[in-house]
Image (spheres, rainbow, N blue to C red):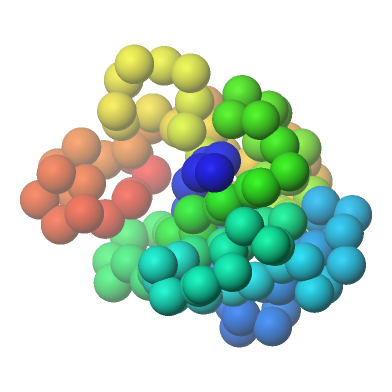
Length: 133
């Protein structure tokens, strides 16, 4: 089942992302799969987590990660995972916040600090670029 999207402030190799995600989820590396398209995985439900990655050409967050968890309910809290992943990768990520405003997100830094940030509306609407305002 789909769990969340997060935007990472850097690109990382699939093997590095797999290891970091497994560590953040406290599961074996073999239970995490990193792929460019989840539709190409015939045994997806046999994994604990699948991370579908895509690059974004412009903006502050060049890597979009869609996280699919098969061991958690949809309403489970994704913030601890984002915090741990950022800590392991020494990165920042943006994740959806609870606001109905499409131009705000939560920014998680490598120390686990959360803050609400605004996105540049024109950059997102015109170029699909996630740029902090």
